[in-house]
Amino acid sequence: MKLTFKHYGIILFDLITAYLHLSLYPDFSFTLNGVGYIGLLEAYFWPTPLFQDREIHVILWWGLVIYTVATILLWVAIGDPHFVLGTHSATGYYAKTAEIFLLAFLWADKPKREPLV
Image 1 (spheres, helix red, strand yellow):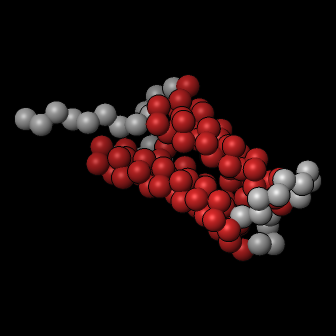
Image 2 (image 1 turned 180 degrees about the vertical axis):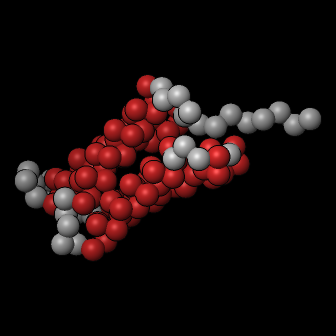
Image 3 (image 1 turned 90 degrees about the vertical axis):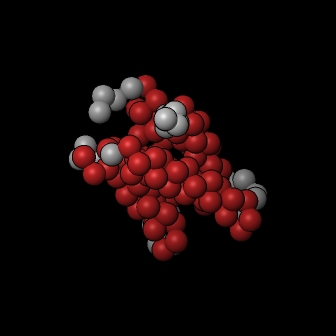
């Protein structure tokens, strides 16, 4: 797989998102979320025939998109809406910004539909 600009964007914003979640380390749920982002990123770009198979790669794409959207929606539902610089609430806003960019790059890398024969 040859990496393109959109792939570098996915890698960059996924790692930023994972870092922001892992930076909240004592909180187990944030740590798990950061590890989940790293695991999905690794599977998405792992250069083995299994993960690069068309059907599996589409499933991984959908998995990363759904994981990111679920993280955003959970933050909207139960996150701290008050932005205070230097606190966990500010980190939430930074992470959501990175996740929106991640979704944009994922959308640019959306798998093409194969024509029905």
